[in-house]
Length: 236
Image (cartoon, rainbow, N blue to C red; front, side):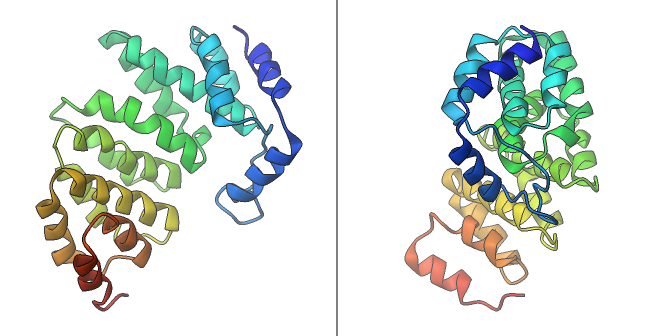
């Protein structure tokens, strides 16, 4: 399917009121993280339905969708890419990973990162010993690469493999952006769902220096007493 046809399908589902709300919700104003992003105004389930119909779209057309100014076009392309990755053999998966990593500047909002990164990068690295890729992304100056690095560890966590999540969360303790505080806190909370002792061990060592948003996300599922313990400690 052609990128132009997929965009037309999305536009037919567009709603100006939803588009206006999305522009506010995803912080598209001057100086905000989503500055300049534009929206058609269709819902995620609607976008997923379009992606399902067009799931065999070739990468050459997905590249055009990722380059599109409309958020939902990029979202649709990534949903398709994730589905293709799930069905691919090892060689094709490597091609998809390489393509994805070459286009991370277009995976340029938190929802785009969160629906794609662990399904592609995380799943690719899950059984591999060499995970230097994660740390190259984390060391990037591009915010979206940094978030991809952290959120990709969902795949590891689901395999009861927590080391990279903890290491990255420690690396980003002094990060300036709220989106990274939320991402790290979310991943730490996911660790805690599977091994509360590992989470509380990290908190015991780092709670005093954790940004408050990261801490709040991390302790969300702990007991009321545990929450009080960590929230009452001095915060930076």
